[in-house]
Amino acid sequence: MNNNTEIDILEAARRLFLKKGFKETTVREIVKEANTSKAMLNYYYRSKEKLFFIVFDEAFHKVYSRIRTSFLRDDIDFAKKLELAVSDCTCFFNETPQLPIFIAGEVARNPNKIGKRISELIENDFIDIFNKQFEGNFGNNANSETYSSFLIIAILSLCVFPIIAKPVLKFSIGFEENKFEEIFNAHQSLISPFVLAAIHSKI
Image 1 (cartoon, rainbow, N blue to C red):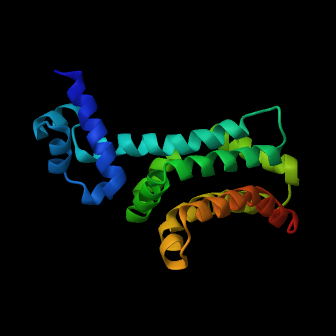
Image 2: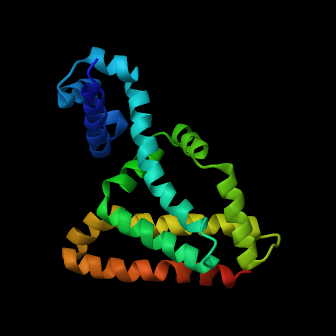
């Protein structure tokens, strides 16, 4: 078998899934894009779903690895780790806007299945590390688990939503590209201190 065919199928599927999502992408479109046959797709990947999860896992890991890397550093404090994670993720999302849109779209399409998949991709040790670092920064009390979850939700929301909302902002409010970049950069710099201040006000 030609290994290039296997790669061509994966690259074609990646382009189509990121553009159209799982539901709207057909096997026929994938094999046509890859200039191959359905038999070859089944030989290498067995099914559209298995091929999809290769693409999804890859996309999610690109985001997750940035967050994990920041929080595994032991040479900076919690606030700086959070700042680096936010900066890295927002820059990455702005450069590859199709990724957060793709992930969010698939979560909305099939929340139980995709949610389970994401939980399998996040190592348990990282959750423990994050919670311990959170408690080290804010203290351990009855609300620690609630506010550590709030921090994650707030950070993801504030990082991802401007990217998803960008077309709306550009066309409904009239933002030019350079104006959006100016506002987005200011927004990025405010995320970490805003969320930390919100938690400090409650704990």
